Image (cartoon, rainbow, N blue to C red; front, side, top):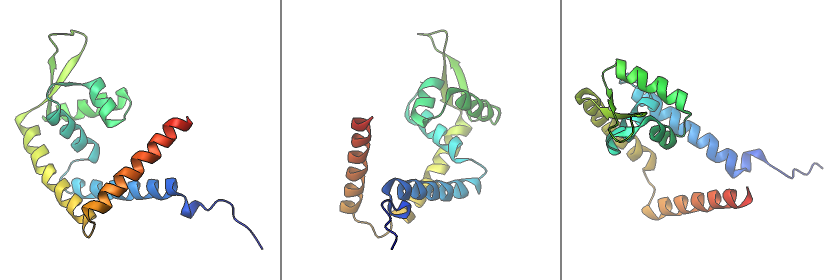
Length: 147
């Protein structure tokens, strides 16, 4: 008889990671249909909702390294979605703003994201969602305490 002390398929961290990857891949597929990546949409979202954000702030919000954000913003600037403007209070940094085309695309992708959210949450109660979020928050607190 073999006794398994640790079952990866029952590990909440593994289940959460696999689920997050599947959700991200599904959203990516829906956005790619409209010729935009998930990272591009997330950047547009944060730029729109944090008027005049720096690349450093964007990298923090997206949990990406700054060089990755620089490449992302460079591409979006070439596509005409984002502008870099001078920061009057700190000449060393540029602020990111959306162009009118970037605002239009972000709004269109917001509708795609809302549909995705609706599809994913179908059949779940608000209580289910609140419990899920609370459980994840507690797990993150436990990780921070153990570190």
